Image (cartoon, rainbow, N blue to C red; front, side, top):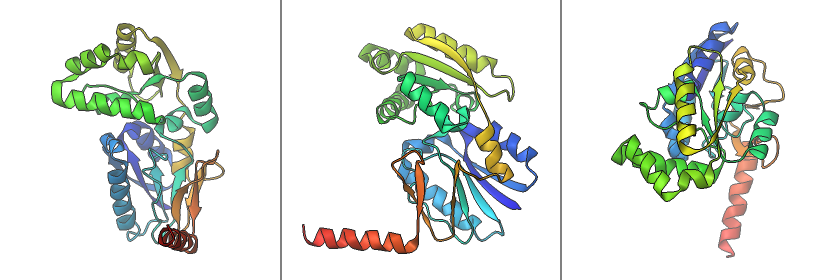
Amino acid sequence: MKLKCIGCEVLARPIYHSAALSPHVVDVELLPRGLHNQPADLRARLQAIVDASGELGYDAILLAYGLCGQATSGLIAPTVPVVIPRAHDCITLFLGSRQRYNEQFEGFPGTYWYTQDYVERYAGSGASLSLGSGTQAELQGVYEEYVSKYGQDNADYLMEVMGAWQKHYRRAVYIELGLGDGSATEAQAKDEAARRGWAFERLAGDLVLIRRLLIGDWQEDYLVLPPGHRVVMSYDEAVIACKSPSQTDLVQNMDTINHAYQ
């Protein structure tokens, strides 16, 4: 098969590594991680690339993204299928399963996540991967705004003065993927955890979801979106589902009718 993989740059090493081992021809396009802060913009960017890729002879288009703040909800497959992991965010992709993701987020709320690609591609500033929680994502947005305006050191000081870090976070975790030397990132995670009074932990990552995505093993853990269908939130353990064009039209018509009678 000829495949197009569109992914977030925080997954650069796992994507390139898995593409190199895939039996298929895989073209890779990475988008900046900062787009997560504007889900609507990310969705528009993804849709434009998906639409353009549908005309280039690919057998399928792969998205190395999760739901990611609903950024992938609403995407429509063009003339070829679109395959998306059933994941809330990229932390699931780093940990390797929804079960492991749920265990971490239910057992250890308030965790600040670090990975090598994420830190390296953020010009030396903060490294949160707390994208699954609205509160944590909002807090990270405030921090990044402070970094852009005042620099990282001043941003850290302001967050600590306000008590924001201490209020929402208690634990720092570095996810080791075994791809390249991540010792500098791990050391940074340890130092920041110690400075903020957090517990520190190192977890082994698992590339199985990215690897299976790129080799074409799309059973169970992936949504295969047929041409013309749309991604929607499923509000259950499946995370996402597909909606046919007729279902989409029906929902839109019902919304119009309901609005007319309000």
